[in-house]
Image 1 (cartoon, rainbow, N blue to C red):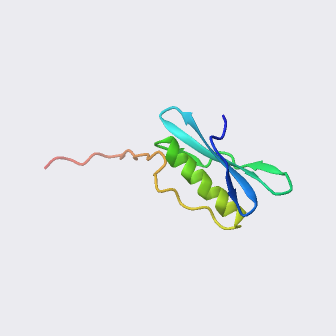
Image 2 (image 1 turned 90 degrees about the vertical axis):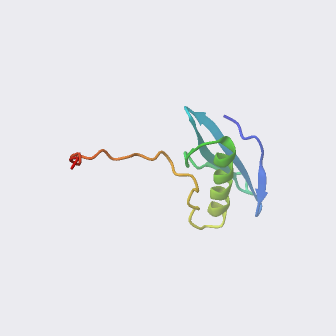
Image 3 (image 1 turned 60 degrees about the vertical axis):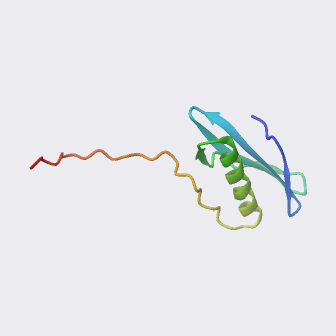
Length: 91
């Protein structure tokens, strides 16, 4: 897994990463600080395409540098439909 590009943001280096995970792409970001420290976000969510995953990872990295909450993803991550315990009777 490698970052395809790096973005400079407020003195930090953000490396958004998307890696294939079955039919989805998992997003994560590596943040490099000006003093040489690096930290990885861990998995940030799963997305339908690599571009969406990298865009979200970049937005999360910017939020981390700004010390604010990460954005909500615009792609629902694996929607699970609940099964009903009782079926409705036909009338």
